[in-house]
Image (spheres, rainbow, N blue to C red):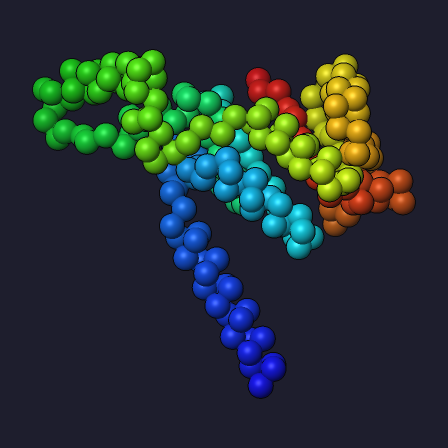
Length: 220
């Protein structure tokens, strides 16, 4: 009986998760998949995953990354397979809102029709952001990173920084160490991997001890 009850609980938990996932709002811009989960929900899910020691990753595409993702299949797959792909910037949300507007089949009207729609979305950026964000909410990457570091500080977690330039990384380590004193930064350079994608040495394995990895890159 206990085994059956445990099985039922696991089954119900999976169903509940699937329903939540289906309820999540998704959109696709130039083949790049985004979801409209609000910052509070993203942080809640991150905390749950950390508590259960589940591996996951979050991406925050901005317009430049979406354009790059359209051309680069590998990048697009990385974004589309993320646990959360949240829009970083009002430009992404505005683009989604524009693509979601009604279309017309009349060739003569297409140019003025879409032009006026574009003007309307542009005006909404200034005066009606709530209308723009009905389906998708802006989650700025830098704000999400600060919130995750705050969470890591509360729980005394280990963090690994990856990407950007040495100067930026060094400055980031200094600022994080000063503001979040309970965080232990394990490192700031990538591991060497073997042909199976595993750490090639014991030194490289140290990175695996990090609970959170912050990855920062510049776009061309």
